[in-house]
Length: 473
View 1 (tube, rainbow, N blue to C red):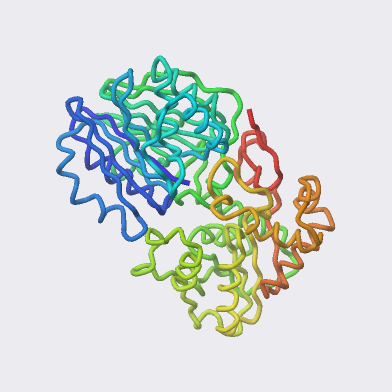
View 2 (cartoon, rainbow, N blue to C red):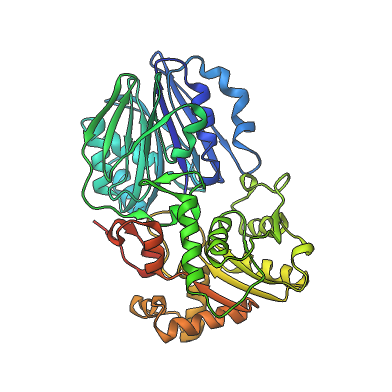
């Protein structure tokens, strides 16, 4: 997904940006960058995270940023950023949390207009550089951001560091969040509010969809008011968000408890010995299930992180699978002859879950009941990089549906039948998954229960990957 952090202060803020950005490490695995401005001069550093931690990569470079009072940092799942640009509006740095569906179309348009690109992302156009160029086409920073919102299909939230302020802009439908915090010395803006507490900042508010603000040491000035339509990504609560994070006034861990409880209330035909979560994001869901059922919560799986941390996880799928397999260790004290109810956040490709089930069966588990905290992922995400980081063909639910239908050319209308939990096709699909994964039983969260657990109106949530619904314009 990616995550960013920015700070404007009346005193030096290099350490605040460094640690604030580090608190977003769970949101990205590939690249990270810092940019600061001091006395009108911009300084930037970018490193790969595929072979190390954010802190290890950047800590030794902090002195070069001097006593800067403004800066931004970003952890990215994709391209190198922040991007620095010199334009008719002066010099600025851009950090984004974005997925641009029409990047090829926009790139061609800019190239035909004799613009050029200097950065690459896995051999392709760097999406953040494209955003930075589009901003430079405006008559002002405000006009440039609004041009980005007008041009792109997908989503794009951004921080823009200038020599006098930071501009924070939340994407047009608010799919990704931006929170504002402050203390007596200045202001911060970030993808997650959980980065504020230990740095001494108090949460102020979230930006609204399409809202643009200019943040200086003197305060926050609204440049563009928020729009009325909101489509915040539901996966923020289910998977992406750190347990201590809040989005739209709703705490991530608390929401996960409610998700687990909702599944427990629909689960009357089994009597597990205890509930367990697939670490890390399945843990909160499982605690909610156990609390609602009045059964113990235990840890038959533990994660080994000293040499298999998520930050080292490569983009290569074969290596990703190896990391996932090696870092989860079964504890035979809690597996032998046990009937275990597991909760996980989702099933994307199915490979990791199948590997984990084999481990459990080899460890002597008597029954493995799997509960998934969201509905089946059937429609690839067009707005973030969750279910699009692997190819559409690899989505587990779609593979099963293609096998059931006996063909590849399946219409969205057919896929929507499988997305309906009350449709016989959905039930048959889940039964096939259950047998393939060697589970005793398998159930997915109903979308209506998920929406209720989050606590926002359905129309304010993006649920596209489950039911094919979304705002496009």
